[in-house]
Image 1 (cartoon, rainbow, N blue to C red):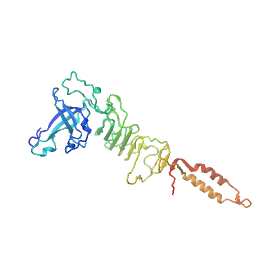
Image 2: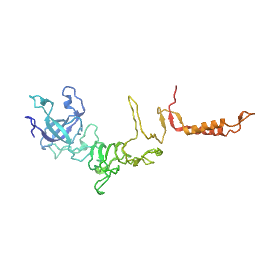
Image 3: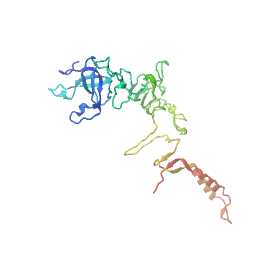
Image 4: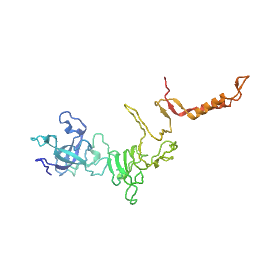
Length: 353
């Protein structure tokens, strides 16, 4: 196909990647950026064509470096040197993997471009995909109507999806979404990292409770999240969430789940703000100030009871002979309640000033 400018051709070819060693290096010099992510490939056009190409990505903003043995679509068109009238300046660019194996982790078809296809060792196990690349069985995500899905090679993904409240029949989708809602088309964004993979490339769906780590941005969906603590938040007056069932919330929300969560502000405050309430909950200890905090926090209601008992004791009759209280029941009760005063779960750092 010819462009509007003389001698500017656009050509296409399908190639097998044969070398990726230079894709991860930074080459110094003026032309260094022109060789970023460069791979070497051999044409699949004919089985006797041994021509090789040095190929670079067509866009450096969306990088998917192939592995050895993958089949990819490439094109030849202008490069930066084409601005000079004396130089035609053209390069080969890789566009996309041709998924000949329907794989998520890789689509290797080694030996496809060999001149001796009858005798070539085309077993991917005998031809490394790279220096440390591991062939893995990764299940693809179940798509739903209208979804835009980006899947990494290792079971990590971003889904730009929506509520699917009406499904024509039980066989329309292989797997149903784990989220529910009442309004078709309500947006949901899911970033997921690490899932349970199934055999035979069977579809899977993100699961907030079993995926390694995930972030959900919802609009009107119900997310079946299960909290790890036995003490679930259900006592906030006017809370539209819960009543003890956080999975039934249908407003917009951000949910993040992982085995460990760290939030750090390098220069300014960490702000947690809510017009309704904030719940910090754990089946273990909660420490404020540092992880080494040992100063037990005080139970406010118990402290109030103790102070009330002490004040009441002051108001009782004193024996004029012994100068002691005739009735010591309040002070005895106060002393007994001291055992309940300090928390065994909540701790703070002791101030030294």
